[in-house]
Amino acid sequence: MTTSSASPKKAPRKAATRKRSATGKRPAAKKAPAVKPAAVLIVGAGFAGLGMAIRLKQAGIEDIVILERANAVGGTWRDNQYPGAACDIPSNLYSLSLIHISEPTRPY
Image (cartoon, rainbow, N blue to C red; front, side):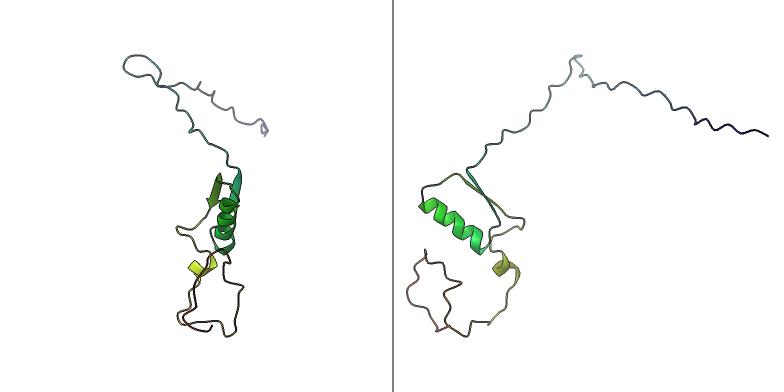
């Protein structure tokens, strides 16, 4: 008994054709939307991203795009909320110096 090691033949491929409308004309090709490049791209709309955007605008740079994967701004502060939690020491780390807030309502 003999066996053939030849592979099975593939069916010939059909040529790609575009559908024609009732008038016999091909439909117009869809154009990709125009994309305008930005001067600055900021990834993330959290504390640092928003602070950077504010400083750039203050420096006269208006052509800014901020990318955020979530449906709202805020970063870690948006994702992690701890009701009633507060810092137990005076801290300027989480204060944007570019935003003047009068006196705090509580010490820490």
